Length: 224
Ligand SMILES: *Cc1c(COP(=O)(O)O)cnc(C)c1O
Image 1 (cartoon, rainbow, N blue to C red):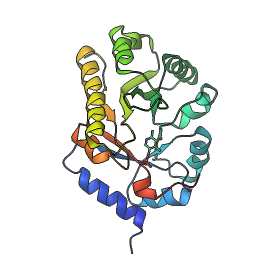
Image 2: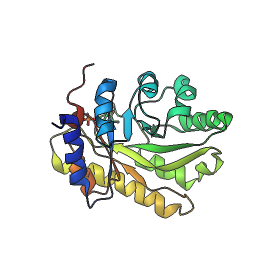
Image 3: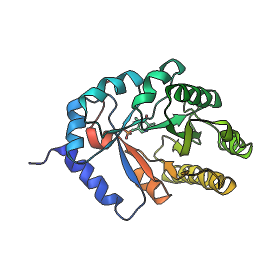
């Protein structure tokens, strides 16, 4: 009998058919055994929000796993993360971006990142305001990066039951992405809009998400 993690992944992928979006399985706070079940079901992109936890899982999973970092990245953890991460989705300041670039260059590798944009109501969520992000690209500040590819943006909708509000938040994230892309046609590979979680990913896909980050709906509730 198919396990329930595999069944959920299959179900979500079925619903994503015909859309541009791909699934990142958010495995934070779940044991390697759960990740293995997801892997067996064909899942390759996994999202983690703490560097130590991601690093502890890497040796126990096959090499072709693509690790996405989705949490607040502390500056003292950047160096350890870089060799193992496929995409840092949560660049939330220019200072962090500059540091990531510097450390990546030192390692002689390259890194792919998303800029995190803050559109939600909650003050607690981090990231650039849409106007700060526009300003960053208008100044063409990214031209100074030597080892970092900015591949798109990541955002979260407000934590609310109000579907209209959620839709507006996703629209704002997508709008920010489209604006930047139109303004900077030289930004190659700028093609990713990461938005949508367990409670709201169908709305995110409707509004043009290309990457959904789903944890609870696959793995169940987290044991903190
Ligand atoms: C935890 C987390 C998710 C997944 O949330 P679920 O509600 O469990 O799907 C997605 N994105 C980010 C940035 C997260 O921290």
